[in-house]
Each structure stands twice: as C-alpha cells, then as structure tokens.
Image (cartoon, one colour):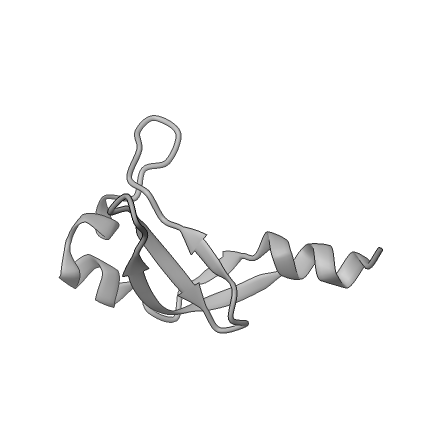
Length: 66
C-alpha cells in the first residue's frame, strides 16, 4: 500500500528512517547497488522527498488480515 513520507528520524545506529503518514516507519538507506537513494544523504534531498509515496509493507499485512 502506498503511503507518503511525512518526516524522518535517525535510528539508534544512525540510519535514516522515513516516518509515513500511516504512522509506520521504513528505513531509507543509500546502499548501492541494492538501494540507490543518494537523496537521503542530504537535508535538501530528504526535504525534496517529503510527500513521496513508499510501499508500506505493514499496511499491506494489516489489509490482508490474520
């Protein structure tokens, strides 16, 4: 399920975590070649992606039910 990025914070290890509009969170790492997210490395890049939709796996699981 697509949910928009509402904000960011760092986890205990210093990795960036997107705060989604649904209240769930998702790591947003720049970790080539698996994930190329250069934008996450700067404040300007993160700000430019506020409102961008990411797939929320937890919302998907909740929608499927038990």
